[in-house]
Length: 247
Ligand SMILES: NC(=O)c1ccc[n+]([C@@H]2O[C@H](COP(=O)([O-])OP(=O)(O)OC[C@H]3O[C@@H](n4cnc5c(N)ncnc54)[C@H](O)[C@@H]3O)[C@@H](O)[C@H]2O)c1
Image 1 (cartoon, protein in one colour):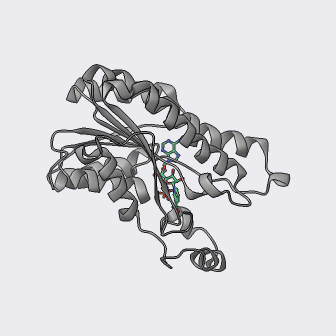
Image 2 (cartoon, rainbow, N blue to C red; image 1 turned 90 degrees about the vertical axis):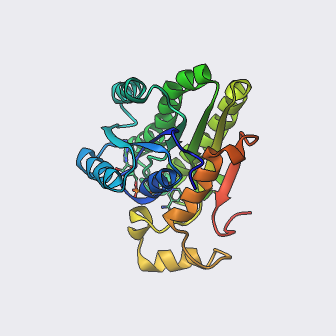
Image 3 (cartoon, protein in one colour; image 1 turned 180 degrees about the vertical axis):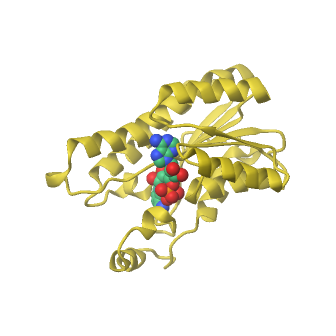
């Protein structure tokens, strides 16, 4: 498929896991990729890999908690490509702990990275998108933001926050043909979930009607759809990719 031919897409947290799969899938549909991550070497190597496959791709060091690096990335992309068509707010972390024991710094870090980071990246790209009268913003939330999870009050708050944020921005920018949507993955097999003990992993899988972990590609397909022309009339929505874990 080449329906994203010539579209310029920025993906945050792109060097591994879901962000990497999203970047590969957007590239397979013809998009020009700006892969960004706080991990400069890893994301640089990923851009090399994309270019070796014939994709027009660049890497940028972007820490979503650092507005200077966001502004520099957006300015650099506009200078190089003249437009930004797609932003995928994918960068995210977890710092799990029961509320009673949660350190204020872990609350602050997760909110600053997962929610304020998406706010800052969205704010930085929205002006050029409004000028172009087209754009697609997709943020990666989580099933945990929809149903809660013990030990993840900070993460759940950040991911639920992304949903409210996206719905509000969707209303602000819809008249200029910019759509703002959310993908809410369930249990996906990446470094983030491989860090869980095996007993916890299998207990979680037992709660999934489709009885398996999702793959990063399952999530990437939903993002590609929302970035495509086929989703032109869809905004302010949450697309769950969770194997039926939460309906
Ligand atoms: N894996 C899951 O089961 C799952 C489920 C639901 C939602 N998600 C969400 O999907 C997204 C990707 O998750 P993943 O499983 O691929 O995680 P991951 O830990 O494998 O990858 C996260 C990426 O974000 C980058 N990153 C971390 N801090 C950053 C910062 N300050 N600025 C920019 N980049 C930064 C990391 O370097 C890494 O490349 C996250 O937002 C996560 O919350 C994951």
